[in-house]
Image (cartoon, rainbow, N blue to C red; front, side, top):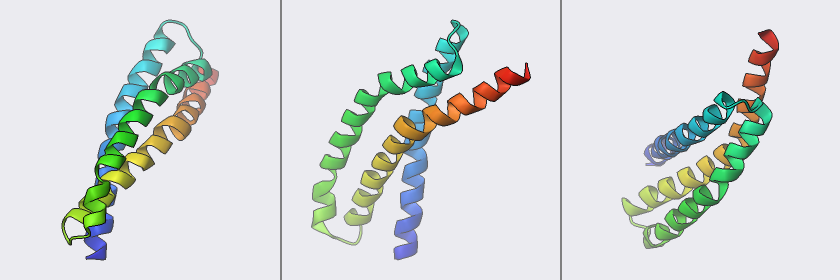
Amino acid sequence: MYLCSTQSKWYTFELFFGILLRYHLQHADGLRKSGWIARDAAYDAGSRRMVPIFLTTATTAMGVVPMIIEATSFWMPVGVSICAGGIGSLIMVVVMLPVIYWKLYEKKKDKQ
């Protein structure tokens, strides 16, 4: 049971991260095409998306708390997966993704 629960957490994390990643990269790429440097584009994309992502994650995490509290063999792992996936994706998108984007595109600019 533990293996299935852990595996479903990773699937949920990948799902949430993929959705959030797409929107962040689209915004940052749009800013880069309009002449912004990679660092400023990554910072602006992260700061603009932080509040909507945080509010969505908070409401989702609070919405699945009854599923976690119920502690049944089906609903608890589902609730934990949704909650952990949302919070993990929030941290990745708001903190790590802008830094990774900045470092990758900064190196591409240096090579050109």
